[in-house]
Length: 437
Image (cartoon, rainbow, N blue to C red):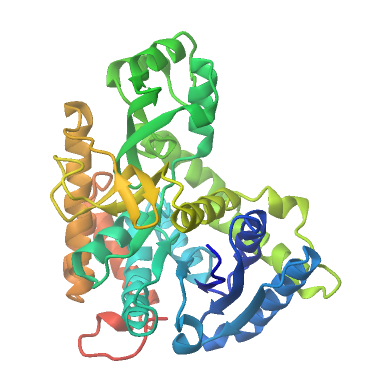
């Protein structure tokens, strides 16, 4: 593609923006980017300006002509954009800290991907995604929206269920380490395998592992079954299950262990949110120093680097029509027959200039079908609640989640959440035209 691209990062005041740009730099020989616009709320202007300054120094250091601009104006940012990336909510804030405290006090797991914490986050983020899509339809109708915001599954379901767009893709949580582990077990290279994933983010399963059009899944299960805890899982469990779960499913199959780790870490001030907030402060210190013009070693090894790499790889495949296989969140058009048409799914797809071509999974194995259908019912109920601006229905949806059991604790935690987030939940006051914070 000779055309120079305009990219937009929504949530542009996030300290993670330079990590995204570092990944973009690595693809600078594949496609050219002329502008990157950072879009965020006016009250985050000072932080966004620091991010803008460091990002421009970073690009200049790598001798690229790409320019970064910061604004709170949707029209300036989105006008004629080619790709829009949402990283809304990726940076932890006081809302996350307060929600984590609520769940700790009610002896519940706090995790952005699962359960009540993910629901809290969705209630704050999904209305912003709806607002973004409305502006995109006005200012850059042909642009792809690439979502990195969490909870991915709920956001994707809400978009496909109610938003007016057919150009939305979500990034998968499945780590690249799994593919590398599979390749090592099978004595081949990762790029020689096509791993077919199917499910709902963050509950996905590897149902096939192809090499030269031959499915080697059973061989893989046999191979890793020869040693305990191979590729993140107990060999006995894998032998019983017959498919390969994504590592995030440890929060389901080992819920009590994961829950106890959260409780201990929170008590010792080492929960994910607490640690992320400390790390974010360190990153801002780097950006505020006008002499700094390169990412530090810690930045290059940050946990979000892989997600940003996936996002840049995804648009590179669209731009160059690579037709390679990637795991994405997209709409179900009969690809997984046990999930209804039109719903959001996480699935392996071939990426083309016209978008994804998902592989046909057909039927889900019985041993995982019920869990995924249960999760989908929760996603749909919560998406309905958000669209209808009905917090009572949202509470009901949370109670239907596969990991939610104690209705009394849910009611108490949800009541506290509402009281502490009146401003952030302004969207749910029917007829209120104010933007959600």
